[in-house]
Image (tube, rainbow, N blue to C red; front, side):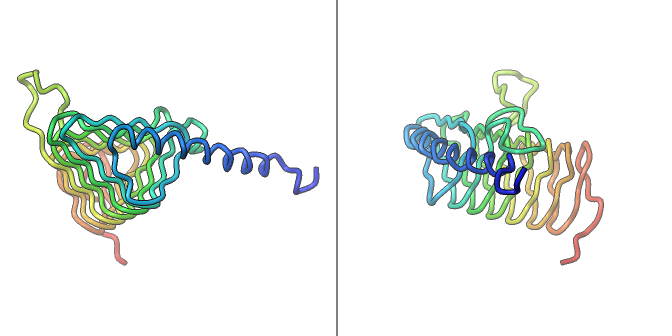
Length: 197
């Protein structure tokens, strides 16, 4: 088979056409749910937005949302879901961030800086979600600074601050603050080494 007839090129064309369709659908959904997108974002598959009245979701420019099973070859198990779950909640996402099957659930405040990479099937939440259960604690804000990379399956739980340029290893559960410029991993997540830039 000649190189220009390779199946790869048909896949590229298919993705470009699909991207146009998904962008229209997701931008309409964001508009209906009062999600403020500050610039051009790219969507693959349907991203689920949900906002309660009196809540806010701000998304910066040039963000990418991989929500279909075929949009990321490492495997995406669910669509991206970005939601506010309590009144007064606020989600702020910086520019040039990437998400693959990422779930962000906010009861109070979640802030992501610029160039944050969220690997496949990641979770970021500032709540225990079941506030009617006496075993849960108070909601606590989450902050993830610029250039942080969350590996595959990372869970970032309430009250966490991750410093800039840090990398969180695959399947880690982040329950405590992580400083800037480190590699951290595990359950619970701990610093493994410093990154020298």
